[in-house]
Structures are given as structure tokens and as C-alpha cells.
Length: 73
Image (cartoon, rainbow, N blue to C red; front, side, top):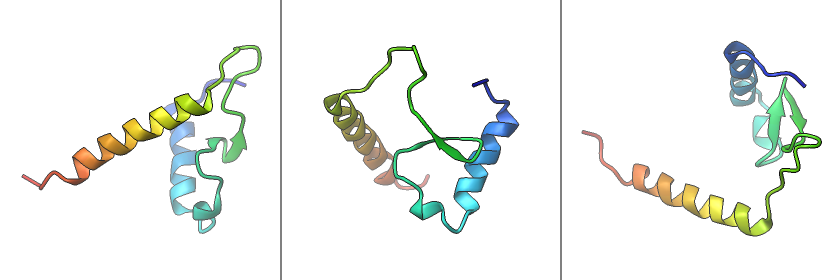
């Protein structure tokens, strides 16, 4: 586990967007180097509760709705 350069990070994003199997990748998964990897770092003691994940998704959906309902200027 090492940090990625912006170019390396962009590679995975572009790969996911362009890959014909992209829509079949696990929804909500964390990708690194074109592979699904654990969301939490070992020994970092970071975890998300189901409630935290639900709250995050509600806030994200609210934010997306605000932008999708705005008309172009």
C-alpha cells in the first residue's frame, strides 16, 4: 500500500468509465490499480456503521438533486 500519483488514480477512474464491464463492477466498491480493494486500511481502526453509510447516501442524494434541478445559466 502506497499512495498513488494523480495520473495513477486517473487511470483507474478512466478504466472504470471506459470498461465495457464497468456497470457490472460492485457498486460502492473502492478501486485501486483497477482492482477492488478494502475500503479501510489495516490497523487504522476505521469503520463505517450502516447508519453512517445511510446518512452519507441520503446527503449525497440531496446534494445531487440540488444540482440536477438547477437549469443551465
